[in-house]
Amino acid sequence: MKPHIVLFAVMTLFTFLQKSSHAEQLPLAENLPALIETALNNNPELKSSQARWQMFASKAKQASNLEDPMFMFKLQNMLVREPFVFNKDPQSARVIGITQQLPFWGKRAIRQEVANLEAASYKWVIEERKLELTRMVKETYYQIWAVDKSMEIVEKNLRILADFVIIAESKYSVGQGVQQDIYKAGLEKSKMLDMQINLKQQRKSLEANLNYLLYRSGKTTVGTVVDFALPQISLSADQLNQTALETRPQIKSLATLASKGEASHRLAQKEFYPDFNLSFEYMFKDAINTSMITDPGYDMFTLGVTFNLPFQQQRRHAMIAESASETTMATEELHGLKNTISYTINDTLAQLERRRKLVELYKGGIIPQAEQSLESAVISYRVNKVDFLTLLDGRMSLFTYERELYESQAEYMMGVAKLEATVGLELDNIQNQSQ
Image 1 (cartoon, rainbow, N blue to C red):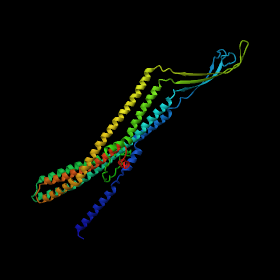
Image 2 (cartoon, helix red, strand yellow):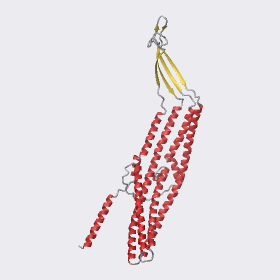
Image 3 (cartoon, rainbow, N blue to C red):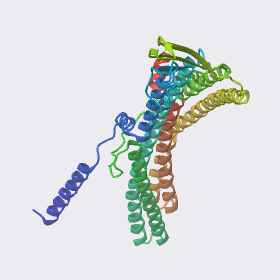
Image 4 (tube, one colour):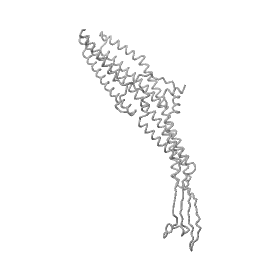
């Protein structure tokens, strides 16, 4: 066997083994639903929100409870010269009693209502946080996809530019080219290497952000992101807005806070009425039979009721003003949120339409035409019909169009994630409900 054939076979085997080793080292493709589930299960901020809701739910269970009754025991009218003697003076006695504080009728029920509404508002905050966390995971996921695609086309262009350098050197060696073409190709290659470095750093940053959202080690490697098809949105802005008004957790949270303000206002009005304190006392007396006093020692009891006099009107009027302001604040925030949702839906739909049209334009028109133009430029350059700058410009134009295609696809999916977070449901669920 000829030496050069043996060398070629060895090099081919080495290249195959190297590619196989590299393929084995590539991380597995990431599964978006699994990533979202991990984030929802592990994210500490979400767990903090859940603990806050549990805290207020526990407070709500206490709101309507009565204060503990007070037990009283006393020795009444005891003689100093003979303490603990009960059969010398008819006024001496052992007394036990119990008191119970009772708020004015209706206060307990309203306090319970206020506490329940406050706890419910925090429960909806958890659901809103889940939407926001899901949106951030999806956005990072598709950003990683766009970076990976950009890195692929950068590597492809580096190989093509290396071929351009070879072509330019060959033409220069036979006197058909200029040395400036070689330098120009080398410069563009250096720019590509610089872009490759930036893209690798960008991917590491996105990996760190995704690991942060999933609350896992920052060194965890994020696998590849599989290609996807752009979902079609068949719902109108009005349909999406109506769905958002019905399902968005933040709307429900603010509506709950507005109801809490109204209940607090009713509770403040109840403060103009007194609270009561009921008491019962029982007096144990001993019989007395002395030379000066005779008393059969009958036991006695006392029933009593006390109540506060609500004279501090300024404080109570301030409570009413506070509750009114609370209701107004929550109501106006709710109006502002509805306005923001309407704007976001219309703006996002417009951006999605633009991105979809750009993707269709790049795939169906610009990129195929740019590829044909570049192929023609390569052929023409070989026969000296176009200069090297035209060839290089065609290659870089195609590179730019390919990057913009992938960026538009990623931006479209990120827009869908934003739309889902705005409405409060996944797109598939929204469209299934409308059918």
